[in-house]
Amino acid sequence: MDFLIGWLAIIPSYATPLLLASLGLIICERAGVLNLGAEGLMAVGAMTGAIIVLSGGNPWAALGGGAIAAAALALLFGLATVVKRADHTLSGLAVVAIGLGVTGVLGRPYAQKTFAGIESLGDLFGIDRGTMLGRIVAVQDPVTIALPLVVIALWWWLQKTRSGLRLTAVGENPAAADVAGIDIQLTQLAAVLASGVLCGLAGAYLSVATSHVWVEGMIAARGWVAIALVIFARWDPARALLGALLFGAADALVPRLQAIGADFPVYLTMTAPYLLTLGVLVLSSLRGKTSGEPSFLGRVYLRQDKH
Image (cartoon, rainbow, N blue to C red):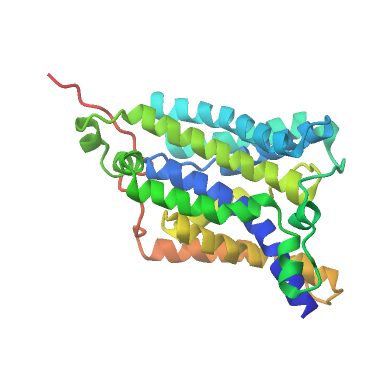
């Protein structure tokens, strides 16, 4: 029972970075911009957040700083893909290379230095840890508690609001959206910036709230897992929440098994989240075009001049 409670308690902290990044990618790709740069954006957010905390900043300021730094890199990606009409795939891979390269150089002086992060609800509100529910809830932080509300709000915005429907229209049929008076470039740039903010927040959360340390390579392919999670969720925020919990549960299994001293193949078990990711991608490719995929995803829209 202790193993089960401990495992359930840490799943949200492992799921949160994946969910934040996937929500950002959903917004971006709903607008028709294929973003494969999540790994680089998360790395920039993680490094920036750690540097701010190690420089004496507040953990909440660190989360914000990580989001802003990743948004700046995302803006470069947006200018390349939306304004200059560069290939989305190559531009996304370039973002990964830039993000990992920059953080490897600038973050080196701050590597392996532990720091205090965001306090848990138990520390903030003195939640009783004597019950099973108390033990699970007490270790959560305000971010993990607020995320379900964020998912609901994003789903409502995409499905029920005029601006959200306009964003979806740009990703489905930009020509028709253009005729309707929607600014295609502005909409797509805003979506790319939103993806940068959320991916940066995901990376900062990983270093500031989960690990309390910056280590080069700490993103460990979570950006690619987030990309697979978007496909798994069919570009739906509610499905992304369920998928993130599933992926997070697989990722959280290893430290729990290590904590109880279980005799098991560590490296084989560590591959579980990535095997799950590979399975999702294989199943998606077998089905052809994934249900829910924006029709104009990854394609360059060339506006026809009106005469």
